[in-house]
Image (cartoon, rainbow, N blue to C red; front, top):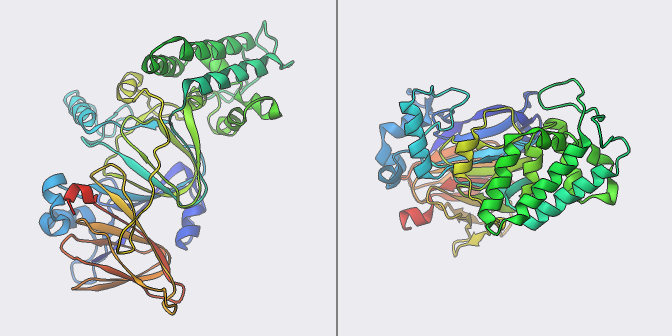
Length: 442
């Protein structure tokens, strides 16, 4: 077993306090968005050896002994197939979708052949892998996930249009409302008539087609093309703050996003998606083609080891509309929750329908209580473990490793079984990721 040092990724949407408060570490004063635990080449964890070899990147350690480190996952995946993160969002992330493995392989090869630099801003595919995800909420967690029923979205657009018609500040014949745009800090006028007409046109487009797929695709595409009508509508979102009970909650919620992304077409796209609130302990998974955005909150995120993201709003980054539309699954969907599976060994597992990963939450009582107990680590090959509360001890047939809050470890496939025990008066909580049992047949 190897103790790890992990990289904190700083993105503008990250919280300045959530990660430090969770892991009991000093805050940097900067937006600490994600803690990466794994062997992704962009920010691999570092193995902290106590011998003469010293620290070494986890991906290099795995490469030196792939069979011992990965077990059967070496032949199946060739590398550590998952990445675990602590995600701390203080602001909305971009609306985005991830490709299938086949789409990623084709897109990665196409961009390589075209000579698109790996770090180019307009590059869509950073690697040839898909990126299914799962998020386990540690705090109240707000998100957008999958397409909502068309009629619900149409109702919201009609309510927005009716509200705009009531605003005396809007001259419906001219452009009078000053609004800060997404691309300019200078107040710009808005065409009220055009905004109302656009909202109703989008509602009609959603409902007029007999084909759910065509209606969602056409509406989604029209919004992201960002014509003058869409822009006129999007920049009126701040007005909804004063609507009170005259509009649905979903519309008033747009005002908070509009403070970060004023005038962004993604404000309108967001109304097409299911708005969800996860309470601590609740979990959802996100397959390829699912349009989603995390809005705020802290959670344990697990994914296939990839960085392929196609964006569709609430961002200043590159949007390749044609490629985006080709990857989206245009169908109304229920929110894909993942329920805990309790094994006969007392393991609490979260198993989405992906072969790369599953998540285990380990919750142990204080050592001095009769229920302190031990838990066997669910291990289908290699695993990573992060302690988020108290102190725990990992014991295998060959070694022992004590971890305190904020500490993490990599456990090779060859080191099994591993028993987790309390190592302090308060017990402890940890999260462990390993390869899916379905993938290994265990």
